[in-house]
Image (tube, rainbow over all chains, first blue to last red):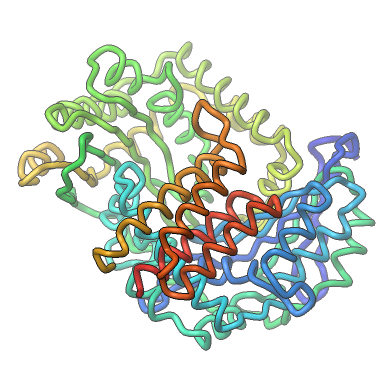
Amino acid sequence: MSAGQFEVVALEGGARLVTAPMLDRASASLVLMFSVGSRYEDERLGGISHFVEHLFFKGTQRRATAKEIAEAIEGVGGSINASTDKEVTSYWTRVPRDHVELAVDVLFDIVTNSQLAPDDIDRERLVILEELKMYQDLPQDYVHSLFEEVMWPAHPLGRDIGGSLKSVKEIKREDLTAYIKGHYLLPNLVVSVSGGVGEAQARGLVESRLGLPANPNGAPYQPAPPGPSKPNLRLLKKDTEQAHICIGVPAISYLDEDRYALDIVNAILGEGMSSRLFLEIRERRGLAYDVHSFTSKHRDSGYFAVYAGVDPGKALEACEAIIAELRRIADEEVPLTELAKAREFTKGRLRLGLESTNAMASWLGQQALLTGRIRTEAEVVAEVDAIDPARASKVAKRVLTQPLQLAVIGPFDSDSAFRTLIEA
Amino acid sequence: MAPSSEPLARHIRRAVTLVNSVADEAGDEEITPSEIAEAIRDAAEAGADAPEKVRRYLLEALDAVSDGMPADYVAMSLYAALGALREA
């Protein structure tokens, strides 16, 4: 099997194993991905997916403390971590290839044998509450959460992954155990292994450790509501030195056939120092310290947005200039030279991003879990190469003409001038 | 948080900042484990009369630095100390 190839096998109980041998590498990476995240939570349990992820690192029956878990992997020079998102929670480790059995053992141990000791729950609750408070004190980050509240009001997709101070304070041990029982199931699991380990070896190591229940159905999530049909705005008044702006529109799912075309539009508009927004808003007009665009895609929803950190006195002008760029790319076909540059940027970033074994394991595992179909790097590159100016224009028109949504944090008493801008 | 706890909270926050800049690999100057340990010791001294939980979490953070544990791990203990102080 050569680099870039992979195999997917169905395991007992409904779990799936993805292997991507990169036999020239000294490392092996293992990722356990579960289809659970903050969109599976109701409001009372906001943040419970993230809470569970933290608690899994606190101790198991065989490794009683967080320190023992960390030392098991750190002791061989490896690293271990986890992340919670809206639809996926991932636990990963990267170790020297001859320690892959240890990596498999530790990761399965933490997700199947966690102690959930009351003292650990109390301690971790304090940690998460502090993280939430710290996050709310970082307006450049927090404005993104406000924007998602505007996009999906009163829906789990619009809530912060970490939950609210209230929900995290009130989550009980029984809630945690019930949540784990309802979601940490074999059919919700993809195991992805990449690096200096072959498929047969990986399969042998994983199959003997599938100790999770095989119940067929985990608890479902609420479908996303239709995108907002009119402009909406949320202003948080705060005495910050910069105004933090997140402006965007409802967009598309990661299953949509236009997703790569939207990525190209995103690259043209706001990724990197030669993007339109960077050149126009920052370099030419000096309106922002930082400006970039990004997309967020979920199974049945998504958005396209622009973040800008600006002098408060220039916030309205910056918003106006950003809106003008969004309209320009929706109205005027992108020149072929600019499109070709964006294609190279996108392909180059993909290739560089997949150099490491843990990036490859995560990329393949996430596709298997979320879409049920894995595209190779070569397939994605071919799809990107097939995007021409007409296709980019089509998706720009389809997405960027949707009603504008805006979140602002800054020293403003009134939102009326911002409202006028997005309603124009 | 009681006003009398504020100096201790400042010490803990300073230690958190140092640890986070190691975790994020930020900053121009390399921060050494000794500097982090010093900041945590300062916090522990300022918190000599703090609730037991706060002192326990600070000592855990100090042990973690001595044992060469990852920065994230040290930060978690410091956040727990800050949270316990806020609760007191």
